[in-house]
Amino acid sequence: MVVRVARKMTRTSISIPGALKRQMDAAGVNWSAYLREVISQRIKQEEERNVAEAVLLNEKLRRKAPSGWDSARVIREWRGRRR
Image 1 (tube, rainbow, N blue to C red):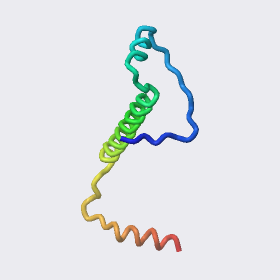
Image 2: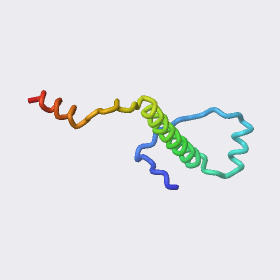
Image 3: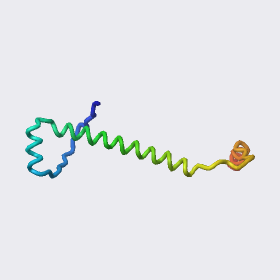
Image 4: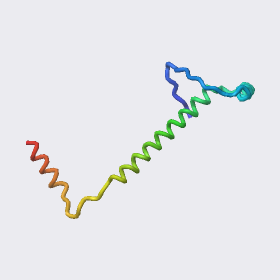
C-alpha cells in the first residue's frame, strides 16, 4: 500500500519506555514511515466503521410507507403548492 504523504509534515511525539526505545533502535526500522502507515490504516478503519454505523442508523430510522400511499400524488401536490 502506498501512503500519500502531505508536502508539509506535522511533527508529533510520543513517550515510550527507554527499554522499548533501545529495542526500536536495534531493529533498524524506519519507525516514522511505519507509524504513518499504521495510523493511516486505523483512520480508514474508523471511516468504514462510521459509514457502517450510519447505514445501521438509517435502517433503524427507515419506515415503510402506509398501505395505499401514492408518492407521485404527494409530489405533484407539493410541486403545485410551489407555484
